[in-house]
Amino acid sequence: MVIGAGQAGLSAAYHLQRRGFVPAGLSGNAGADSAADPLSYVVLDAEDGPGGAWRHRWKSLLMGTVNGISDLPGIPQPQVDPQEPSSSFLSRYFGGYESRLGLAIERPVKVHAVSREDSNPAGRLRINTSRGAWSARALINATGTWTRPFWPIYPGQASFRGRQLHVADYVAAEEFRGQHVIVVGGGISAVGLLDEISKVTGTTWFTRREPVWRDAAFDREAGHDAVALVEERVRQGLPPQSVVAVTGLIWTPALRAAADRGVLKRHPMFTGIEPGGVRMADGSFLAADVILWATGFRAELEHLAPLHLRGPGGGIAMDGTRVAAEPRVHLVGYGPSSSTIGANRAGRAAVAGIVKLLAGSG
Image (cartoon, helix red, strand yellow):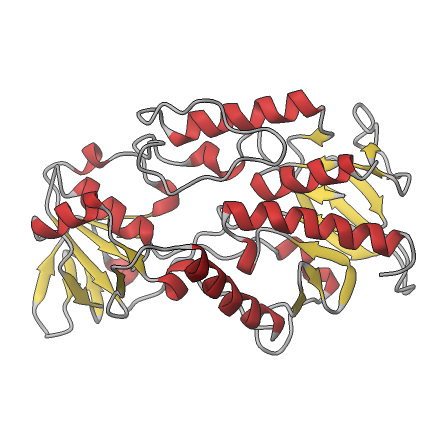
């Protein structure tokens, strides 16, 4: 079974079909308990339609400005209009991919909990969902991070009379016209939105750490080194770091232009939030109307809590895509496979691991 139909989940489904797995044939019977044949598969997706997290990206995130998106395996992207919103283009691409390959996707299905059916380590897993329960020999989890935005807590946060929102709720810069917007966060979304919002209104940028900018091109060797660092963390059972924590921020022509306009002047984190603004680190007060938290996301893994996969380090110890303590469970789109190209590779690796498991050699 695969949970999630974003890039990682679709990659896994593609490789399952290539390995001879067939659709489980559960359409119309989703509410009943069922034990699928070991060589069948199904993808459960909580969304109402194709596209995964891309369905929810803000309309101003165009294909010409979004970070590079890798093709799904087997079918390249159609010709890209750089002015089309990434949300509509990628939802259409993913939907066409699903249809053309005839992938077994059930939606909308929200997975509530995954547990072991019995104490047998080679037994089955039970998946309780909004549309009944399934039983599976193995699980590929591809739920991503979009549904778990991270909101840090600061003194006085509840007293703020203005608007607070997370990047996940952002729509367009125009809604902030005439207001002063504080942007919090040191990642790609933060600097991209600073550039965008600053064209219509005033902004101030805050981060916990001094941003690290990368002048050199992010080539294959740099990408390999970054992935290796994240892999080592998850192998040790530590929570994966953000991509930017490893790679640094990469200069683009748009961001250099924003820097020239003075937009990317970073301030150390404020010490508290007050009704009309924030208290700066130097003790001064900055009035603000909006606080936009561009503070990242956490992996959506709450439904796996009954399996008790997390270790003392707060993360899940991994062996490649496989959970070290539970060989029936693979995580794709997690840690080193959170990029689109990484998700494709992880989908293939997870399926190879499951084939070995079902053959009794993994």
